[in-house]
Image 1 (cartoon, rainbow, N blue to C red):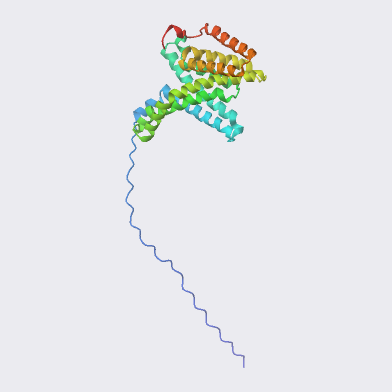
Image 2: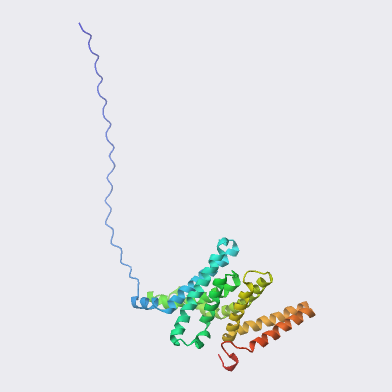
Length: 283
């Protein structure tokens, strides 16, 4: 007789499948209320098409460039100082160029009134510094000081009204800064223009590239500013008074003679007016 087959073990019972608990039904969210931001389209379009908006863009570039250039002295992206220098001057060319074109159109190509305007002076020196590229911080610092207030004034006077926020806290803050600090900042900027001239003269002494040409061009710029700006003439007076005090401290006969020659030469040069006989009229 054959052997009996061994009994097969009963199959193991299957484990029950895990069932995820049913997620509770979330109540429907109410629709978000529409945010109605005031926007004056016509005013926006007219602003975009104005010379003032082009000037604003240029001044914004200058403000940004000078700020970044300043930060390089604190070891922040110092290897890019030439780029920031050029950004500052490109902004100067854009902003001053826009108003120069506007003046040319306004005066029907009559160059007399055009070359007396500040915008032409800054276009002249901005292009010159951009081409000759001396990369002297004090030559672009005055542009940054001027541009900050122009940017703030344009924001509060032209851009904020487009969104009807001209009466907000930020607008009042910008207006307070502009009204309270603009005068002192202009005076300080005029002084830094003279400081820039001193720095450029030092470049001549150290035989830097194009240094003499840059000094001559900047001297013409300062002459134009002196003839057309009371702030520049006041800065020169402060500079002369400061020079007198420094010479008195050293009490050197040779230095005193040199300083007298500088002042007498400046007075002789002042007799030749380029664009404006400022003694003949009240500004």
